[in-house]
Image (cartoon, rainbow, N blue to C red):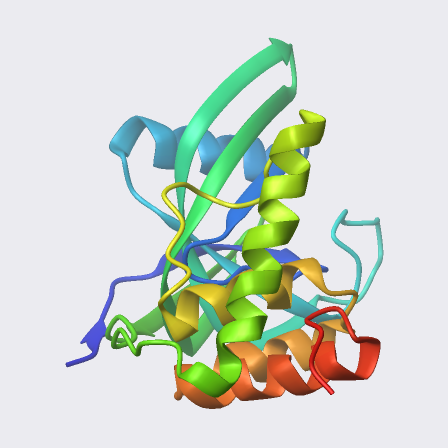
Length: 208
């Protein structure tokens, strides 16, 4: 069942965070420095929501940001402060949530009363979409061989529709509005099928 939460601090971004996804951030705005510090100290998440209008960095006199009604909870896994007024953090996406009511504080920080959605059911990758999972595995293996950073959390789950689809949604150069629609889908299998269609168009997965 879903759960209605007290007001959650929000971080509107020009990207979409998916459950199980990694999100590195460099935080320097005062409103977010305080928010991240409070969340890290309390061990509580904040909400990442996709920007629909406005900029990530607040400008004087700018209109309020407009952001999506669905986002993903982010938990802070690593936090460093290399200099005063700067936090470098890595977050992990957990559950999706819906925004039920939003408020903006005097310092510009958005908060929202939210409904946290249940974790997506684990759906095995069907045989006809196995090439989509295999292509993701090959991509990860190639990055490891080259010694590059892996843009996904460990351990991987190449047999789960949601995990595979979510990772491709993060990796593919999709418009933000398409990523948002993918996030809003309630069926991991449908999300993976759509990803398979996109990969087939680019022939990344070897599908025809």
